[in-house]
Image 1 (cartoon, rainbow, N blue to C red):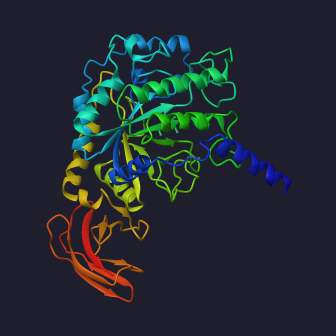
Image 2: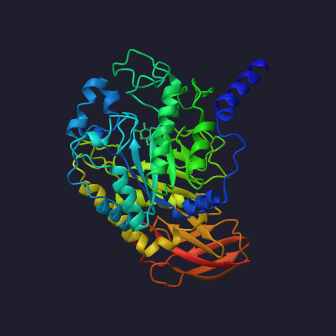
Length: 443
Ligand code: FHN
């Protein structure tokens, strides 16, 4: 019993006391949450000097590259083909409503003109502030910009690397002062939230470096992240800015959305997703097109268009956003395998977007045949299995189906509603990866 209380106490200390106590979201924050939940589909961009070796964004850690040797990448990063207008245009064409951009990953490189670290984009041959270029273009093209910011740092001495799980082979010998690191992060976040206009959200990552691995009974952090100060600062600078933290746990106070990585809530294929989905906050899941976040020259395990589509639709069926990642090449180009898939998704959404954007989770969880999304008086039945003759919806929550038709061309669909069970008879010729049937319903 004593042990249980000690465990519970530690959990409280690690997760709650240091998070933003007594946080009441501002009205504009609540509105921003609703916007976010309605948007459903976003683009994740993992890009920086780590893209140069073509071995993913963990290359510094995985190859034990020392800080001194890794710093050389700064002299090579010159993405002359980078065109913010094209990137943002590509996301829009894909039907995405927001972009989440890496501003500083675990390697510690800052993609903007920061006063607080020399390891930044202005000291590369490129010399242009990538965050500014992206922010201006997002604002111009009407796409919201969210910023990924790593809590973990494989480079700095003042990051608590001695208690961390990763970045042990980067040659650090001196353990600096944790408070200096906290001030550094607060200064950088202040820059990001002051100099780049409206920021949709901050996407934190790396908390897990200071905890036991996912799934362990005690996942309390070994250090105090001072989230009360960090979250408080963000909400003070931009009250509508949503905070999410990829700690792979139940949201802490002060967080405005929850994220999953490489899993839909309820599955745990990645070994990262032991947490329950929040029923209070918007939820997002992120996934890669191949198996890498940052550019990986040998990873050709591309998911098919259909796989990516089913991920988006199943996420929507659970009321969850889908943040789909690309790892652009070091020269600023995006490989055709990514561009083609994004364009295909956009084409699909141009016909079927009504069944994804501004929808709620289906009253039934995703099934073997497909899933449901809903609006007040409509149910969208997404049928992935086009070999079926009919689909049965058990415990149908409406008294009447006023109309049923294929979303793509309004072809009527025969239905039967009996004893709380709706049966939909599918036309013979359906051949879509997701055939969407609209049910106009009434109580
Ligand atoms: O370590 C990172 C990884 O590089 C990537 O950024 C993903 C994206 O969700 N998050 C971390 C792993 O949990």
